[in-house]
Amino acid sequence: MKFVIALALLAALILLYRRWVRASRLRYLDQFEIPAAVLERTRAKRPELTQEQMHLVQQGLQQYFRICVAAGGRFASMPSQAVDDLWHEFILFTRQYEQFCKRALGDYLHHTPVEAMPTRDTATEGIRRTWRLACNMEGIDPKHPQRLPLLFALDAQLGIAGGFIYTLNCKDAAASSGGAFCASHIGSCGGDSGGGDSGSSDGGSSCGSGCGGGGD
Image (cartoon, rainbow, N blue to C red):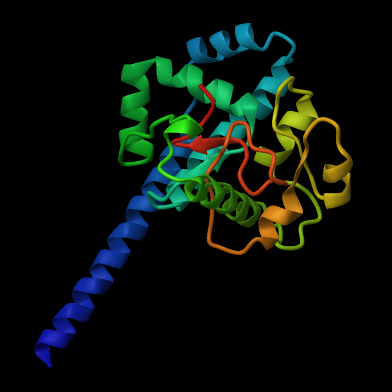
């Protein structure tokens, strides 16, 4: 009996510790600011973006990192090319990025091209996970969304050339000549989760770049 009680207490302590760690990481993310030099490099890559639009991209990257914290080490996708560009520039500042990852995520978050993913299922799982967590963060029903969460809306909103465009209406996606993805389809696919693909066109089940994934 004492052994059972001890195990229960240990399990409770482990759960409390994990919650404390997650809360601590989220607090760090809330106050973290992308280095100015990273923003300057991204503006040089995307000169068409205004300062206000760049602020939205920063918000998108922060949401992405919060999704990675919530994913608990599981793969999640990056469904915005604009945010992926900012993330990629951040990674190039290796020391700062490594320190950030340790504080915010507990481990280094790699930027892995879709070609390097172990299976196609990894990509499919990743986009579902990102969709579900992004919707939860914004109070959106992932199976019956009335709007797109920030990460899935940004590229279309900003008019990003070569971006990942999502629509709530699957008929609009099918009729799109630009290869739009049906976001409603992602939410109805089932599964827990996420994975990205920087060039897929399968209706949105796997698109975008990966959380630990991404173009190049």
